[in-house]
Amino acid sequence: MDVVLPWKSVWITGAGKGIGAALAKLFSKKGVTVYISSRTPADLAQVKDSCRDYPGIVVPIPLDITQPEQIADLVQAWEAGEGIPRLVILNAGTHTPCAVSEFSAEHCKHLLDVNLQGTLNCLAPVLQRYIRSNDGQVAVMGSVAGYRGLPAAAAYGASKAALINLCESLYLDLSALRVKIQLINPGFVRTPLTDKNAFEMPFLLEPEEAAERILIGLCSDKFEITFPRRFSYLLKFLRLLPYRWYFRILTRKNMVKNVQGEEGSKMGTKEFKS
Ligand SMILES: NC(=O)c1ccc[n+]([C@@H]2O[C@H](COP(=O)([O-])OP(=O)(O)OC[C@H]3O[C@@H](n4cnc5c(N)ncnc54)[C@H](OP(=O)(O)O)[C@@H]3O)[C@@H](O)[C@H]2O)c1
Image 1 (cartoon, rainbow, N blue to C red):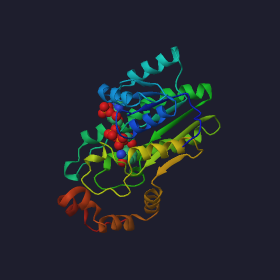
Image 2: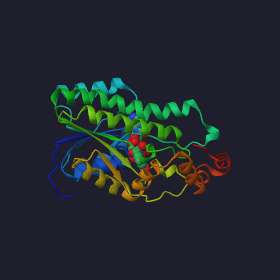
Image 3: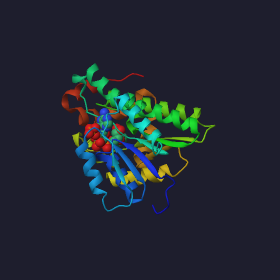
Image 4: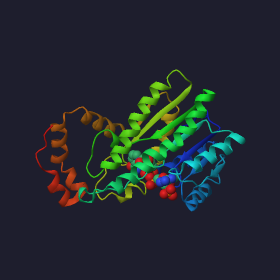
């Protein structure tokens, strides 16, 4: 994409690896100042180092999005100095596939704390400032896994479904303002997060390609940035089906067995009723 970008700076959470790191590199290449956050300073240093030949300055800001006081300190520091970046990408998230035999409240809480509450901890202070100045753009990382329940992803899918609904609602609330909110719903992207998946991931993209597609979406007026199209449209179609058909298709395709192994498969092949 060879256009001059409308932002001088961007804050990307979860930029130590995976999609966030690829986005940081792309923005730096385009000359944008990139504030990169994650909990692991060594990852951030590596991303900064990999951008040393690019024109955009990279500023590592180690923080944990589950700690609201760390975000408050950052926002205050920006307000006292260079100002909050006019583009914020709330990308940080986590996922540990979980077989139903290991279903636990602790596991769910951890995923919801990071993916949902952690994102809110960043979103709220940023949005408050954007609304006050009637200017700014924020993109929230969802997932096509939030469209409908998928095997071995109960807590992850719930966290992403909540983010999807939240962004839809905020889009309506912000429609009279010059504050732009967008939702990013990728399919599978090869990252340390998906390296944990033991099953075959259809339409798998490299993080650099995902970053390119996200950037194109950020420059557009689209609310939802979703890719690869064929995969996300297929899942959107499945979203329209009644439960009986949806569950049959997923179990017939042996997805429960592929994702959860034999034990999960036995539990998943009962007759589903809508
Ligand atoms: N990869 C995919 O196929 C895919 C598909 C759809 C959506 N997504 C979403 O895209 C986002 C990025 O995924 P990814 O695949 O790039 O994951 P990843 O490779 O695991 O990278 C996640 C990043 O988030 C950071 N992070 C995790 N917990 C954090 C916390 N509490 N505070 C601050 N930073 C934290 C991690 O660094 P530290 O652990 O050092 O903090 C890391 O830099 C996630 O929201 C994910 O749900 C991914």
